[in-house]
Length: 208
Image 1 (cartoon, helix red, strand yellow):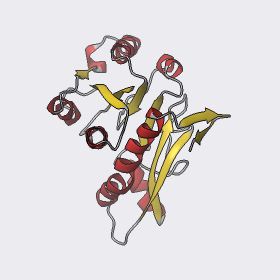
Image 2 (spheres, one colour; image 1 turned 30 degrees about the vertical axis):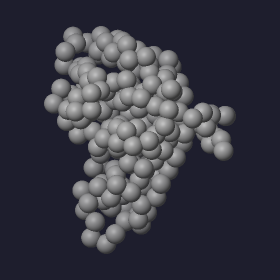
Image 3 (tube, helix red, strand yellow; image 1 turned 60 degrees about the vertical axis):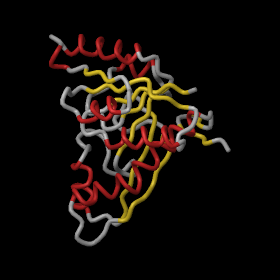
Image 4 (cartoon, helix red, strand yellow; image 1 turned 180 degrees about the vertical axis):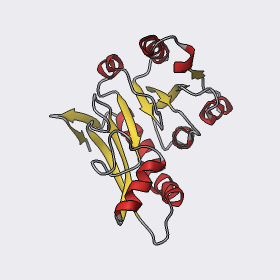
């Protein structure tokens, strides 16, 4: 059984996709041991409570320094004893000691086809605004392992989504969620839960 902790800052639509997939059997051999948010008003915490999942807020505002927040945050994650940490719209910089501790055991969903429109400053609607501004015809989403860089870890899954005439950032964001993010995040977790993902030479190999 793969125990996962999900970290989220906002509404938690990707969290909901994971919860639904666990409950429907789309993700097998997996249970969610807890949801952590840096934002006490995050609707994601309500989603967790509705499904009987432990929900925790660890906010930088509640600590006198960033170092103390990092320590408290890592302790909260460790307390859930996760085999895998899932970043599902989590807008906090992950402490280096946590990246080291959970190397190749922490994944992130990013709303673009990495290496396009990723890295520092590219998150949420900003990704879709940049894609539309550049005039690309295909966008998408990526699930990748987390390393010390921003959106630079080994890629697990990607899915492309077509840009349509008249798209706004909000409309495009929704389509990328529905057609890509909510599909490949649960799929990646299921692959990991069933021992089908390994990292070799900085790249992932999906085992048949």
